Amino acid sequence: MKLNYYRRDWTLYLQDCPCDLHFVQYLESRQVSDKLIFHFGTGEHHLVGKTNYERGNPNEILAVTLSRGEYDAYIDFVIANPAAANYYKVFFADIYTLSSRMLPSFDIATLFHLCEYYDDREYRDDEDYSEFEKSGEPHLNSAYARLDDAGVLELFLGKLNPGGKLLFFKGSSMWEWKPEKVVKAAISRGRLVVEDEYESLLICGLAS
Ligand SMILES: C[S@@+](CC[C@H](N)C(=O)[O-])C[C@H]1O[C@@H](n2cnc3c(N)ncnc32)[C@H](O)[C@@H]1O
Figure 1 (cartoon, rainbow, N blue to C red):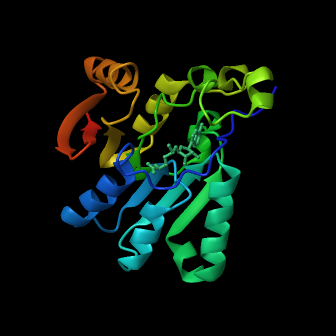
Figure 2: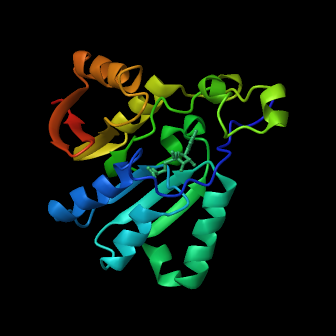
């Protein structure tokens, strides 16, 4: 059994994946400051953390990556810019292995890649996989992780401060197939309400 780690170092592809850019624009346009933010999926570019630093660190960000290269890029960034580490922390983890006790409460959590990478079946034929990996054992979160996608959503619903927000990426290639359904299910259960939209992002709050 292997961790379903992320095989790429994701550079910015704004045409296909503008969520991080839209998020930093959202934070700036709404003048969001003094918030603790959880960010799912740093990319190798670390746009969210680096932009926060360039803007004078208005917020504190804890971000997760499951890519060795993206984590290395973070290490290089904070070695060169140690003051940035006060406001931008990245950890290497499979989001499906997190628990409530391991996390603080957040004001904002981005779940942009919910339902994109759980159990890697859909992606076995694309360029992310070497011939060795295609022929090898599948990497299944379900074989080892305590959470699935609904569990991740439930975890972060439980980690939101009053007035906190969960952000989703409507431009995800998976959106209609799965994340939208998971979000709609949480809305029907009376857990979540849609508050706003910004470009490709759906902004939700806790239902009262
Ligand atoms: C397509 S990239 C997008 C990166 C960035 N958010 C962007 O839009 O440019 C997907 C991101 O999700 C992270 N990722 C994938 N599966 C993950 C998992 N199970 N737990 C934590 N992070 C994961 C990857 O490391 C990567 O940073």
